[in-house]
Image (spheres, rainbow, N blue to C red):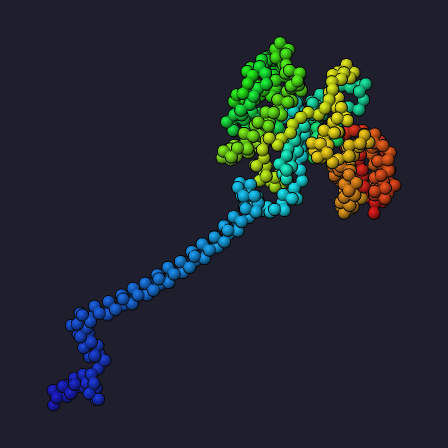
Length: 468
């Protein structure tokens, strides 16, 4: 009986009432079937691999298509930009000029809007400004001018009391300010130069070496020795065409006369006059060599020399628009000469006196194309130091525009203590009519007085609160 009950309980655990097997029994059966059928396992694994491989291939193809489309789009954009750039280069004159113009964002209108570039080239040697040349460049006509001003030019007010400090090459040493020389040149020429390029002689010497020398026709045999501590100069050059390196360039530019006292022939220009002519001709030859396309690769070296030995008040923004046109400049279009003059002894000192009538005509022809009125009554622009004592910056701007409109040259602008009355200090003995004209322009009764010539301006104008 007990044995029958035990069998019955065992059967009850194995089989459900509905005749199905238990869950555990099913699991055991499944495991047996799986373990006994390895081909089934392999098929399942391979099927998973195939699915993953298909997905990878699909993603790869999609990525390749996307990359291809992206590259096509980039290529199209590049071609369009290149086409536009090429067209702009063509519009701007093609070649290197057009390329640089386009890089600088210039258009055809840029050239039309460019004025002549005018500046004073000042060469310093031994703390003296022995080279003084007024220069101009017209980018439209590709014409350039170099006008030498003799270093012994008299710029004083009284010939009877003239001293060596009245020579134009002494002006720079007063305050070591190149603008003093610029103003002195404007005074004797009637020009209205505002910029200077101040060059140490060493700059030209190093530039000559950097560009591989300059082919130049030395006009005469040069033999001179100065063994003084200040100079220690030895010049030994043979006449004729030759390659001038930096060392020879210094000798060439500093030569005035030989040990025996002989100098350049009279028809060339004796002593300082011949020296100035040689300087102009050598600068012209150096410029021609520097502008050769092969020297583009030496641009960094040339810029380093410029940064070290050249001072200028010309900014990059003021110069950059001229660069694309200057590279096409032909030195055959460069005119160089000297301001007409005569030697004259003043108070026992020898000076160079400018021949005013001839000088005015020459300056008019070279710098103004013969269009300027050069009547005897013509005077250089009156220079003004403008100080704002009104306490109102808008008034300063207004006065500045009024003065420039009437051709006054405002050379200095600043602020001063607030004052009620507008005043004018006459520093260079200007006519009373000039003072009256300014009062009329400003519509004020300006207080007038005289003062020392110590601010590098003819007049010092202080705007008062009475200016409306």
